[in-house]
Structures are given as structure tokens and as C-alpha cells.
Length: 170
Image (cartoon, rainbow, N blue to C red; front, side, top):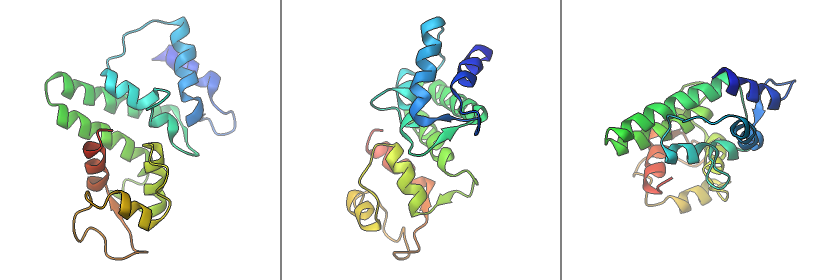
């Protein structure tokens, strides 16, 4: 991990001590040009992190990652990969969804507002969910009855995001 940390440090912003999400692929590319290693992460989980076209972690808008955040993400993705290797694919996918949820729920409240959910959904490649009505239209068959009180009082729970993640095969 020390060599990967060096690659991280070369790309991080000196003011914020974070690597911008858009540069995350470059960090891994520069590292892999010099060093060959076997990552104990399932290929699907790795593509969810940094693949140029799927790469949810790399596509989070206006987001940078500290070394500790990246390490926590990798650890949770390794646990997810372990579950998949043992045949518990559904549980592995739920853990993967949790890792992305935790990037947005930094206060560990278990819920986020519309703005936070919009940011998370943009990272998951849903780019047209800026309003309450567009969110309701996109996920009308996924959202359980009585999930929300009223417009303006939206509180999004992890369970809804997990359901979207699984249902859409993200």
C-alpha cells in the first residue's frame, strides 16, 4: 500500500490533500504502468470504482478523496469481493452499494437529503435527477409506498439507494 500511497500523493491537490474524482483513473493508471500487482478485488467491483465508463467513484461530481477515504473504500470493496468469491453475490453487491453510500453520508446519519441523493445518483451515472419530480419519475416502480412524507421533506434512506443499485444492476 505504501507505493500506491506515493502515487496518490503525486496526484493530490496540495491545498486540500485530496485527489479529485476526475483524476482517480490517472492515479491508478500511473501506478499500474510501473507496478504489476494482483488486486484482491473482484473485477466487477474494480470497474465500479475506476473504470473510465462505469467508475462510480471516479465520476462523483465536485468530489475529492483523502487517502483514508480511498483506503476505506478499497477495504469495503475487498470485503464485497470476498463475499462474491464465497458465492454470496447479492450480499457482495449490497456491500458495494454501501461503500458508495458512505461516500455521501459522511455524517453517518443513515439518510441524506435531495441534494445529497442527487450527487450520489450523478456519481452512479443518473444525470437527469436534479428535481424531486424527475427522481420520482425515474424510480416510480422502485420507491415503496409511504417512503416519503411530502415534497420538500424528502429524506433518502440507504435501503432505497441499495434497492436502486441492485435493481438497475449497477
